[in-house]
Length: 268
Image (cartoon, rainbow, N blue to C red; front, side, top):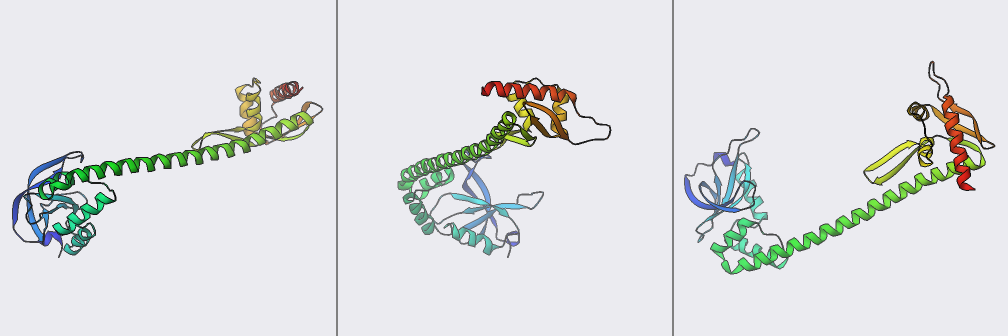
């Protein structure tokens, strides 16, 4: 049998529920319908996707019911009861035994549970509050430890990536000083795991050494330059990607030779 097929009569009972954002326990009179034993369902709540209803526990001897959750009304009775059995909510005996276990753990208690215990076992209220606070501190420490671990992993990632990029830059500077083929590969530096800046190697070196490069020439370096060949302290030859109607940038040689001169002066 599914919940919407239950035909037991509705009755009105005072129940402990939440406000809309579940930050405060409230008392409301609810129309509830017996499902089985101590478990009741509330009225059907229309939903665009699937109609739902609240589930309550109304234990013998308790003057109020306790809200246990919200489920689709096409759930079977057995599904609901099996779920509540796993949560130790089917009987008052099981519920209180679980409360005591959670106090010892310690574990979290919802605000509605703290309110409900006043009616069935008020002597446990203070212990439940203490357990709730201890669990909060425990989770806070776990969160902080996890954050520190993630920060350390992120820092190691950034360091490794930046070391790799810096080696590419250092190797390029060695070629500029001694001569050879300088490949204009991309180089990426990271400020964090999720934030990085990628530029062509030659443009990166131009910026690092304060060489003024026209915007158009920067674009040519990014899009066309493949290799700059350095001999005797000058760049006289390049290999670049040819485009229809495209020519080698003559301004590039002026900027590149200024870079070579600056690098060599700094090395002297």
